[in-house]
Amino acid sequence: MSRAVLLSCPVCDAVRALDGRRSDHSKTDIISTAKRHLRTHQLSESKAAIRAHQITYEALEILVSGDDIDRLPVEAWRQPTATWLPEDVPVPAAQTAGATLSQTDDD
Ligand SMILES: [Zn+2]
Image 1 (tube, helix red, strand yellow):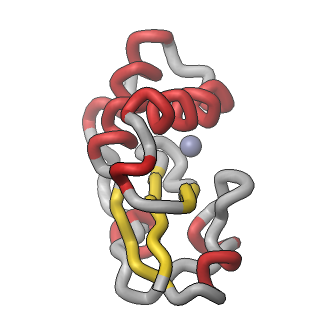
Image 2 (image 1 turned 180 degrees about the vertical axis):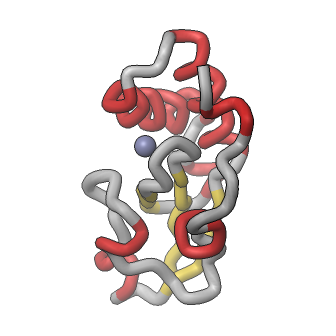
Image 3 (image 1 turned 90 degrees about the horizontal axis):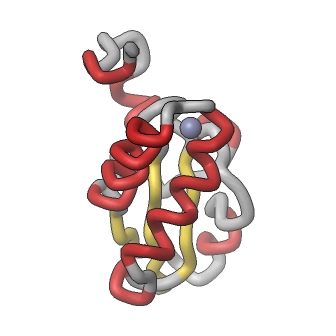
């Protein structure tokens, strides 16, 4: 079994996997990974910072088989519907589709 850290974007629900344990990745690394993605959303700087911290806070260490690690979106952010994820992983897009957006999504 291998471990990966799963990041999920609170803005568009895209997911990104980082190879290794949660403790293998510094908070700074995860925040910069999150920020690079958040740039695509053209948020204000303060809002992007809040989202980056949210992504980091919600980063989830998952356990997958050695073969499955290559199926995770380790190269780029992907929509959960466009990539493979372990079945027991709670994916926001799959579970909250149609749910009300959090109030902080609006300016
Ligand atoms: Zn996003």
